[in-house]
Length: 302
Image 1 (cartoon, rainbow, N blue to C red):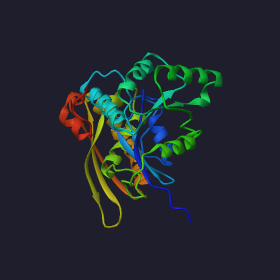
Image 2 (image 1 turned 60 degrees about the horizontal axis):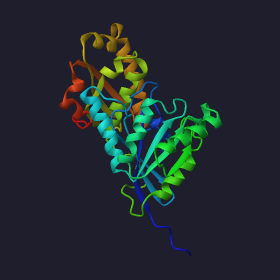
Image 3 (image 1 turned 180 degrees about the vertical axis):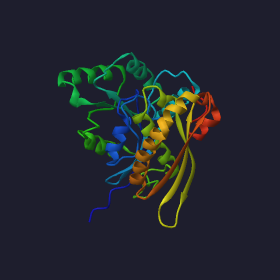
Image 4 (image 1 turned 90 degrees about the horizontal axis):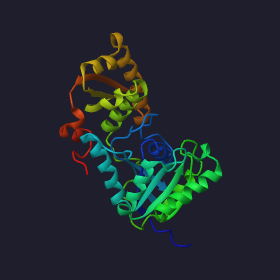
């Protein structure tokens, strides 16, 4: 019998502009939903670890906040967190939206990437929406700006090309022992995953601006003997008028958010959930280091 292949383990940071499809790609690589998604930009606020097994390799994927020009302390912390992930990774996978192409934002990110990423790879996403000649031109233009080691064309939403990308990344991981048990898919605590799933509903059910002025703080996560869990969360907003929007007429909106979030949390954690939400007004929370630390963000930025 030939000797077994040596195990491999490494970190892949998925970076790119907001709404490039990073969280959708992480879910596709995992084969299940872990990261929250929405049509709105900047849905992801903190890095999230997804653990994938591919043959003898354990790949530790980091879904990161979108890279953009920050204004508030929270923005700077999000961008700093993403660049830190790229700096520490064995492979930095730059995800480029094929529909948007090399707009000024993407060009700025590409120009900075070589000074941060040790091993940059390129993945053109949403290739099902763009003609092949345009894709080839875009790949060539991106590689002219950054010496990418590998280039892939994928559609994260449909899964096209994701398997080939996962296999190639597995082969690129350094030899070494696995860092997590084979059945573990993330290191994020259940209470934080639950808070993220509630925040996803804020993004999906509220207006264009309000989701960015809101946050979900986990308060308690109590496991019951019957296997269910009691989850209490605080929704932060910045103004009384925003609180009224979240609550809705007669509390209708908060009930709808809670119902949808409870179903998503129960599905993700595979247990019955009793979810209790309350809304608090905290002006300027996006510039409050204490709140950012509670959300898992570094309360600083570069």
